[in-house]
Structure formats: C-alpha cells, structure tokens
Image (cartoon, rainbow, N blue to C red; front, top):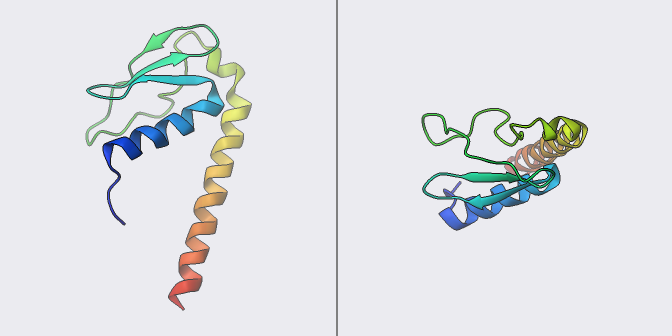
Amino acid sequence: MPALTLRAAEGKLRRRLRPVAVTLLQFTPSAVLECDACGQCWSPNCAHGGRFPRGYWRCPNGCAEVLAEAAAEITARWRREAQAVAEAVEFLAR
C-alpha cells in the first residue's frame, strides 16, 4: 500500500476530526487542534514515529467527554469499514 502524501494525510485527519467537533488549524510542523464547542486550542504531542497519542482529539477542557458517544460510534464505523476491506481483500485473494 503506498504511503499517504502529506496533503492526503491532512485531509484524512480533518475528516476524522469533523464528527468529534474538533477542527485542525495547523497540520505541519506540529498539529494544532481547536475545540468547536469552547474554542480551546491544543497541540497533541506525537509519539515516536509521528503517531498521535490515544485521545489526542479530546479537548483539554473536557468538552469531548460530551461527545464520547459520538466518538465511540465513529470508532465502531471505522472498525466495520476496516473489516469490510479485509474481507474484500481476502475474497479477491482467492
């Protein structure tokens, strides 16, 4: 699978943040996020390898806790999509 371009990675992150009411203000050199509910801005510290830590999208003021149910739904949808892709790949490999 080809690596994502910087622009594609930024677009993917923006789409993932939209449902949890967080806006990506800046992507490089370090991400800056803004809570749509309260306006709080923060920059999650990336782990080694450039990955965001768990819960990076959560507002420091706790606004995201209100949206936890929506986040759980989104995570479940991502898992279902990943499962569907895995099944399609397995089917095509036959």
